[in-house]
Amino acid sequence: MDDDGTVRHALTRVIQGHGLATIEAGSGAEALAILEREGEIPLCISDVHMAEMDGVTFLREALRRYPDMAVIMLTGVADVTTAVECLQIGALDYISKPVVMEEVRARVDKALEKRQLVLQNRFYQKNLEGRVRELDRRNKESLINGVQTLVHALEAKDAYTSGHSSRVARYAQKTAVHLGYVGELLEYIRLGAELHDIGKIGTREAILNKPGALTPAEFEHVKEHTALGEKILSPFLNESPMVLRIVRSHHERLDGCGFPDGLSGDRIPREARIVAVVDAFDAMTTSRAYRLPRTPTEAFDELHRCAGAHFDPEVVDAFTTAFRDVTALPIGR
Image 1: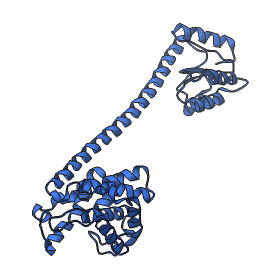
Image 2 (image 1 turned 90 degrees about the vertical axis):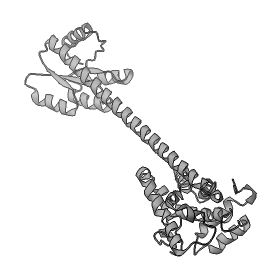
Image 3 (image 1 turned 60 degrees about the vertical axis):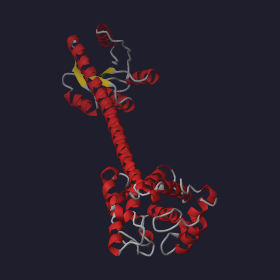
Image 4 (image 1 turned 30 degrees about the vertical axis):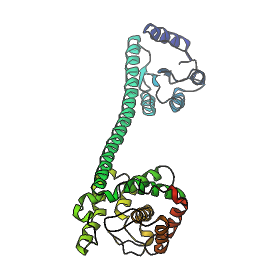
């Protein structure tokens, strides 16, 4: 681009002789119109001093529209200040007039090479970030699958709790829907509910399967499973704090008499309050070594009786609403 036709035609012949196709423009406005029509081109050579639109103005506008276009500026020998300004704006190089054709060829090659490197680096960076995210996702899935396998192995040690975690997850997710949770938050609640008892891996089997009441010391040992579960999961679920809050706080009570932190009221994470309700329901409606199961109606009545002191009344109502049809409950499945 140059308003001097002689210079423009000479540069065109040199660049075409270098194996590149060219488009000529006699002004900045004409060049912008061509870019609007043709789209981004790899390289533009522009004079600085032109009557209708100076090269600096063109450079700013062209790079605003097409930031990946390589631009070489043509400047006078004494025009170093303007050349530096162009480089600061984003030009890749400048050539001093009068031009030497061999220098033009060398500067064109250099500018195109710089542009290609920038585009390649951006491509590699974008794809590398994507691959790292995908690898991180796969690693997390693999670790979670491993933990879920441990949950199933834990339940297999006790026939009375077989399927407990998966049922609690189903109860929790459907209840959460009735409380307004959507999308990714529902998946966090489902996962937290499924993993809520993972800390019982550290609970002695004799206590887990004891066919009678626990001693105070044994109960203290069982209570450790909430904090232990959080500790087990933290290394690879640190970006999913909702899951960790469920695992740690699903045995807290509204009156502050729960464990492990003695939280009360709204200080208990709402997602943990959801799992507290559905966990208790599943425990009541399935057989245990030390007692027979209650009917769903009896279990619902007990939840409502304890609402306000032990359980969140809003969650109890949502759970009851979500499972009005007791025949659809996955009890024993």
